[in-house]
Length: 91
Image 1 (cartoon, rainbow, N blue to C red):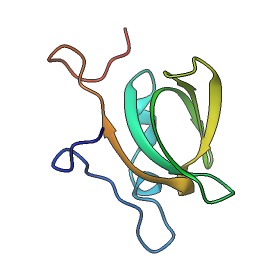
Image 2 (cartoon, rainbow, N blue to C red; image 1 turned 60 degrees about the horizontal axis):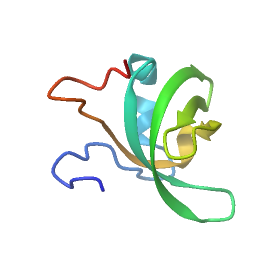
Image 3 (cartoon, rainbow, N blue to C red; image 1 turned 90 degrees about the horizontal axis):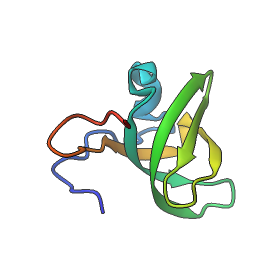
Image 4 (cartoon, helix red, strand yellow; image 1 turned 120 degrees about the vertical axis):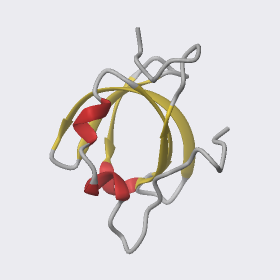
């Protein structure tokens, strides 16, 4: 579950905060995201970011182990995942 104090990105005015920052800096790192899909379903996921191209974030969902593509504009909030007291490097 995301800690509200750690959550630093929030979607406002139909433009994701994730679109306004350099998402590429999270490649190879773990993020916890809150995401809304095309049907309007909201989910919370932990992902490992592999690539960012245009509006798409290519990642692996850590719960399912499946590769996924997320639209940056549909990511409502995100926070880096701390791993054993370090930053969110996946390895």
